[in-house]
Image 1 (cartoon, rainbow, N blue to C red):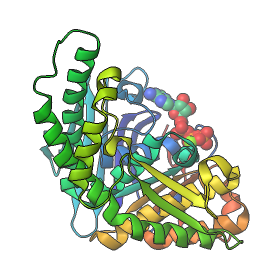
Image 2: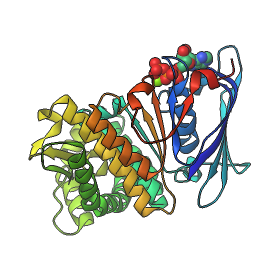
Image 3: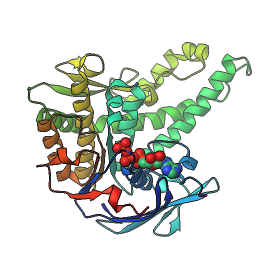
Amino acid sequence: MYVKEIVLENFRNYNEENLKFDKRGSFLCGRNGCGKTNLLESVYILAYGKSFRTVNPEEMIMLSKDFFRIKGFFNGEYKKKIEFRFSKGIKKILINDVEISSMKELIGNIALILLTLNDINLITGEPAMRRRFLNSLLSLLFHDYLVDLLDYRRVLRQRNKILYLKKIGKRNNTQGIDGWTDELIQIGSRIIEKRLSIMSDLNRSASFYYTLFTPQKDKFSIEYLPSFQIKENIEKCFRESLSKGREKELEKGITFTGPHRDELLITINELPVRKFASEGEQRTCAISLKIAQASFLKSKRKDDPILLIDEAVVELDRVRREKVLNSITDIGQCFIATTSCEKMDNMPSLKVIDIENEKSE
Ligand SMILES: Nc1ncnc2c1ncn2[C@@H]1O[C@H](COP(=O)(O)OP(=O)(O)OP(=O)(O)O)[C@@H](O)[C@H]1O
Ligand SMILES: [Mg+2]
């Protein structure tokens, strides 16, 4: 899929704007504060139904206005129009003019990957960041995975509530917990199985990009670390780990094992990058993972992904930057936001959009 046109109304610093793009994408250039990230954010919202910068849509309404609207026209395997409106505290999402009732109907329509300088958190941040990475990839690949993930969260909340109420003495038993435990095991095992099923392809792809971007021949590896030992049958092992940990669960009031506690171990030459790698290596790892994610989506879905790159590659040295940009433009439509368009000489021949001049004030 690719974005053919974006129409913005009262969105952040865009009053009324209509921007057209070609299939390969563009460099979005202009001074600090001219609206490059805002534009990327608007495309992201059409894919995920929420921003990557704020959980509060009010902030995105142009100052002194009382609503905003983003409309996107997408082309590819099929044509699609997606619209996001926010007014009086209520958001509405329409696909081909029909309002959807659940986020599940939106996610997966547009395979979109965002690269920003914050991606380094994917390496240095908490395990939740790496689980989010896997969840986002798998949700764009398998609709069932997204459904399981949302169900798992609901079941986990219910199960934890019983444990917590027992812990603080508001309940004197854990009646009803067995039903939640059974559901948790069933859904959780499917989630783990799906995650494990992509690990070797993901590892191959991320290693390929890491090696492409680095001059030395370092050995990159990514591995799934479950929160309990998996021998053969996942469900059986999950159940065993929950019953073994019951005493601790009651003491702390939460569920300690399951896909919500699993982790990805990323290493270079067998050393965990989170602790040992330099900042440049960590950045390169994060970029390699994100590009592997996009390339994975391209190979497994019928449509090409859209890549939004917000300054993420500008920090890299020239050789790496060139390699990264050439790789991503092969994958799908790319939008590369940067203040330093002059640094992009000799880079892939994408159209340059000067956001400052394009924007009607
Ligand atoms: N709700 C809003 N109403 C009006 N203006 C807003 C709103 N939210 C943000 N802005 C303005 O949008 C401007 C552009 O922001 P944006 O983050 O897109 O800039 P940018 O081009 O990415 O800059 P940089 O190069 O520094 O990253 C900022 O000056 C900000 O004040
Ligand atoms: Mg910006």
